[in-house]
Image 1 (cartoon, each protein chain N blue to C red):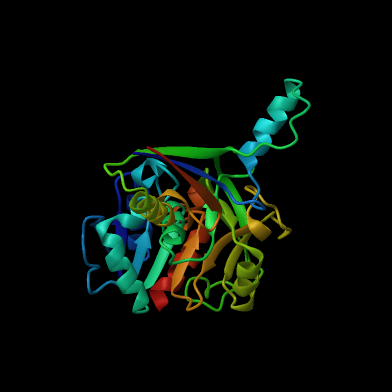
Image 2 (image 1 turned 120 degrees about the vertical axis):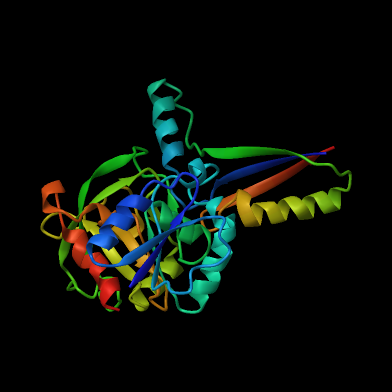
Length: 80
Length: 224
C-alpha cells in the first residue's frame, strides 16, 4: 500500500514561498491566479494491506515527525 | 562552571561556542548526539548552531529524535539550564522544549550579517547582565529564522516575560529582518531555564571581529 502525505502551512500562517511563486506567475501574465500555497509531498510505501492500521500509523508519523503541527497541516491519502 | 555542548551530524558552531565559553573561564565538553546521558556536572547545556541532519524535512526536525535528546529532556525537566543558538533554537522548538516554531525567512533569503537586538526582558539568568532596552549587536546567519507563534501563545509569552530579544535598528526601533512575529529573536520557557535565540552571541566575543556584545550575554550563565 502507498500513502501520500501532503504537508502545508496552516491557513493564517504566511506562506512566503507561495507568495513568491504567486508574484512570479503574475509576472508571467497568469493573471487568474489568486493565491498560491507551496507545500511538500511525502510518498510512503507500506508493507501492509490493513487500511485502518496504515491510517493510524501514518497519522502518528505526521504528528511525530512529518509535520510540525504548530505551523503545518497534513492530509493523508492511502492508495492500495 | 561546566558547559556541555551538543554535537549532531551537521552541527558547525560547537567549537566557536566552546571557545566563547572557555574565554569566559568555563570548562567545556562537546557531547556527541549518541550519548544517552548529560554529564552530571553540567551547569549549562548548549545546543549549538549549524545544520543538524542537513536541515532535512525541517530544520531541527530529525535532531529531536537523536538519543541525546531524551537525556536533554530529563535534564531540562529537572530544571537544568539549556541554551539553543540558531539551529539549536530550532531543535528546542521542534522538541517542544520551547514554544513556537521557526519558518523560512519572509523574503526567502539566507541572512548572514550583524544585527541589532533589543533586550525585552532581563529577569532571567541569560540577560541579567543587561538592562531592558539595551541594544546589542550580534551576528545572524539563518535561512529559517522566522519565528511563529499563534496569538494565544504570544499573549502568554508576554504575560510571563518570556520574550528575550527583538530585532531592532541602532536606535532601538523595531527592524525585522526575517518576518518573525513581533520581530522576536529569542524566547525562553515559562520557568526561565530553557533559552533559544536565532542570533549568535558566541560570534560576538571580540571587538576586533565586529562586536563583543556576546560577552555580557553569555556571562549571565557563568554567574549563576
